[in-house]
Length: 371
Image (cartoon, rainbow, N blue to C red):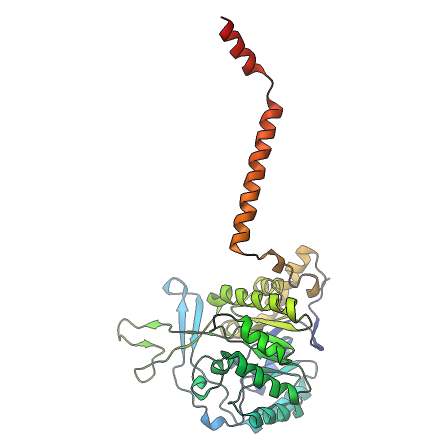
């Protein structure tokens, strides 16, 4: 039987499925539940040193339904990072690791452009026993006004500097989480990796407006009659996430072969996970899927991925990780290859015609002329 166990940046995951930072990892109670259900890892909800600046509003979610009803295919949120005190989180990190020492607990952290703040949050979290860090450079709403989240992640020079601060004090693996709200995701990814980060997580949500209510004429979600652009997730973003993970994996393979990629975006089935791994992901993260289907979905994810591996004869994730990457090229090269194939087919057809000619037509024409 194949195995889903994998070692990433020295961390031993029993499977590649990780709860992504967000509501499903909002406190110790739900994180413990995730580990009991069988998730390989959990990225806790993003924390900062001072939660007093974090004020959520409601409603803060909006949905896009397939065909106007039924299945949720798109999800927008304007939820901020954790509004719980940092000291509470430190106590909960310790309690979670005591209860589930085998589970990989990843602290998601975010701070303003302040070296002392970044160094303090890293040192205090790792002293609490977390296994790794994910640096949130990607939240698209709310905190960018404070030069946090995607405002930092969209500036490669700034990103490289901040990642350098973190790598100067971190003693455990560090992943930088990328925003998709950029022109070239390779640029901030490369900046993070140059600074020493062990891996890249991608993607976070896509800045969006879910829609406008045609009865009230107000955008949604509507808070006191107003709204703000928010982060778009769920299965509708999977094609975009796959493209960006592919681009990051190509960068990693070419320039940073010892680094890793954690794929995020619309993953709901084992088949979805297999596609991300085929494009170079070492682990896969799920957030909106858990909100839709519950923590127990990890069993279906595992069964689906194992089923794919059995069907192809793969024994480990390493057997097929990145297998599909060599099959990407430029449009110009596609034109060249297709033109060459058509020319070869035409030449082969001519050869077949010559080989099959038996001279009957020539004889018939000669007889007609002689008469």
